[in-house]
Length: 218
Image (cartoon, rainbow, N blue to C red; front, side, top):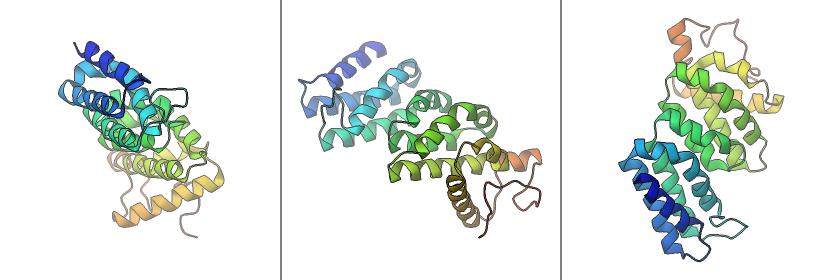
């Protein structure tokens, strides 16, 4: 039945003839379905998320047909609700294909997913995460770039210095920016060095042998 409800909601969302009210109800249906029946919804998440992201970016019906601010606002609420209802693994798999070209929203949602992941799981997932984040970091949108920085800081908070060599795809200027924000977060949080570093006995934040992305203090 979850598949039937999903199909009806997606059809209403994609219809050019449907009004804003129908699209808004369709988005709320997707959100409520995910929250009330997350296990039934999870197999369909990869189909539903692109439609929600289209509504969020103002192209719910495709073909450049804009949507209203009300629909876009409802889409943002639906996206957050759907991602929160899914397990971290399912949410990450659904979001990753859209991180590099889906605007700031999927990147921000990915940051929330990362905060729910165990460090070891996140470490294994970096090959899927990093390419999209690097692509998004090159976006002309300042909102997207800031969302990427916040997400990378969240990853560093979990993985510590292990993460740094994985970010070699960033430009020197991007590496320096990420380092600045990591510094700020560390100072705010009392200098924590990441959960993996603490658990595995890896390099601590103050270790002179660590390999920062860029000089930590200019």
